[in-house]
Length: 280
Length: 330
Image (tube, chains in turn cyan, brown):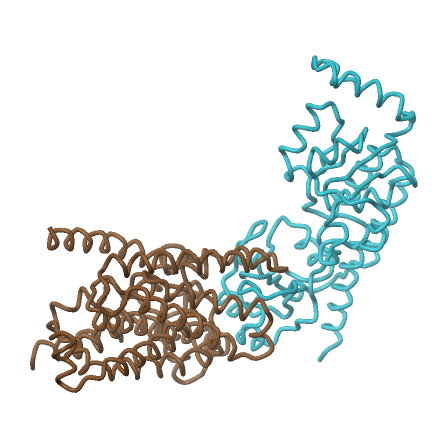
């Protein structure tokens, strides 16, 4: 935390001294934590001690992105800008590994410790990430319990046996294919991903024609945003309705991040798979 | 067979061929016989869906949008006796897009489906009125183009503003769609929504031929021959607003078709507007169909915008026209 003394700005040194007095640095973890990433927002809200987390992003209060809208109301909101975050005098900033790289860079140059958390691309990474954020917050025991509960929940929801076909279909014909968290959720709950079979790795476009020809049993769309867009019109295309796929499932905030709320998404897919098996 | 009739027949053949190509090109990679059989007989579940619900509306809209743009370009050039008049260049498409975007973002189009083409039509009508007011029937090329630039810029800014303020994060990404146009993932719903207006507008414009022929002799001569200029002007406004408005509402603003097509065809059919109008409709259909087949071949999974290709052909052509006019004026 004293790394910034290397810089010769006297104002910074004064600030450092002020910080050292202000923050009763606990041996077990940082006392003032700010999160500037939607996923770390949620993990930090779940894992931090009361008072330890100072602020979460505005996205944490967006019901289409965040599973913890109600809890987020208790925290002041930041928009992930360095200026705003620095003024909160954090001794730990939690950030994503791809977002706001300029902000992260600047905060580090100002001597703030930043822990970056990559987006999860598999179920096994979720528990690893819970443990990693827990360790950064000094809440390793709580994180360990949460990770074990998550793994146990997943194990009960696994659907063995033959696979049903499913495809993700999002605005603009975007689908999630091989090597994604969503793909692993499908695999765990007894589905094979048509997008992955069509050769999409990561996220990519699956033309409507090819989706129709593949004819999956289930199409998982996304929750529409308010306001109109041409991008979302494709989800109402008559051809999509005509292939007769079950369209009950929608991805929502629970699918976005590797948090324990992912279990809810997995459970909904497992239930859908069970209904599919029960139907004649 | 006279040369103009031959040209019309040739163009019809070209449109038919490109229509077929539009039906047969697509990412699903269906067999030729299989897809045509599915289209005509309705046998083969998924293939029928692809052909009837995805490719057929796209091809139909390609024909209609292209015909509208070619025809309205020819009609405007005939009325204004100005070779640079074209719905895209003079801002008619841009204001139609603004109307459409307003209808979508205010929720009007969701409450009442016809609000989308009607709002686009109103936008188009406003700009045609403005253009005729600003540039005047005898307005020179410069006044026309400057008025068009101003109206396009204003409407484009309005469209961007509305989409930026939308609560839907996808709306912002669609600015380029409204300015460049695309036929990707359209359905028969869009055909039913747009086709009646486009056909009505084209019907109005096709009746203008005789009056526009008379107008080539000058306004006084035309009036002496019984042309009522005021009525001609209103019919032109009605026709272009109906047709261009509806085409932009379902396919976005595709530029330069109305500029290039009449110029290419004029030497083939002679200078008479009455002969040029139907030829320009066919030529426009051929150009948009060809562009729409090309976007699917160049970038099959990317939704390359139609306007990108038409501008790549049209803008150099526009420069060439300006060069020619400069020499004439000098």
